[in-house]
Image 1 (cartoon, rainbow, N blue to C red):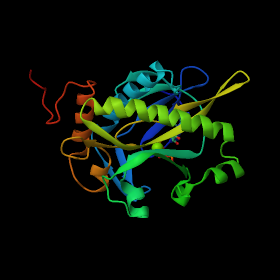
Image 2 (image 1 turned 90 degrees about the vertical axis):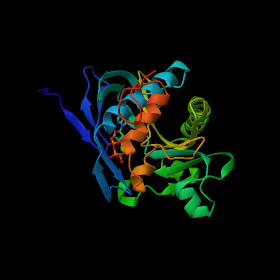
Image 3 (image 1 turned 120 degrees about the vertical axis):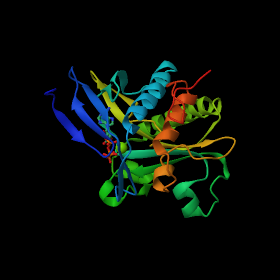
Length: 250
Ligand SMILES: Nc1ncnc2c1ncn2[C@@H]1O[C@H](COP(=O)(O)OP(=O)(O)OP(=O)(O)O)[C@@H](O)[C@H]1O
Ligand SMILES: [Mg+2]
């Protein structure tokens, strides 16, 4: 048994002290939660698949020059990342109307948006992560104007990249959530992508059928949640297993 120190246990992941100062290990659990943890379940294998999908996406982002916290995958459930100071915002980027945007503004789910829209939510579970404007962010010092500019530019680059990446395998990137952190390097601070990018934090629809391949399957009791995540990973070429659970035969 490892004796390493647990730093934080969240809803979907556990953070452990990493092997070197400034590093941490993210352990991906099978726990699924929705509606601010009012709905809970264990989805066997979800953590393994999210570790793989998020590791794959972060690796690709690093490769195109989008800075992320990701260093390397350690094993089935763990990845080594740089420890950052999390900016207390959930940054949502939307391409197609769905979820709270549809509810709040009365725009039917599935309606393509005239352009990609970035929204900010204050990361505060007790308050249900309320939506905030840039004015709140700067007034309350959650992030500087420069950081907001960096976050928006990075988010749009990530959206362009991921939209193409998923589009190429028949998946529509409807929306996704990002977290950013401050990475201190000497007397320099860099804004980097942190946390995870996975079907837990994005809406992914099959291009042909509009079938949901993301956490909405859990939120809306559609069933086959992990199977859908595995299918996302399979299409991206990360795993060979088919959505049916058997080995794919070619
Ligand atoms: N590189 C990093 N350095 C420090 N903290 C990180 C890093 N990446 C992600 N985190 C934080 O680690 C936690 C991951 O755990 P998890 O996703 O399970 O949290 P959560 O239950 O969603 O809670 P929270 O509301 O804090 O996000 C989050 O709080 C996230 O902001
Ligand atoms: Mg989280």
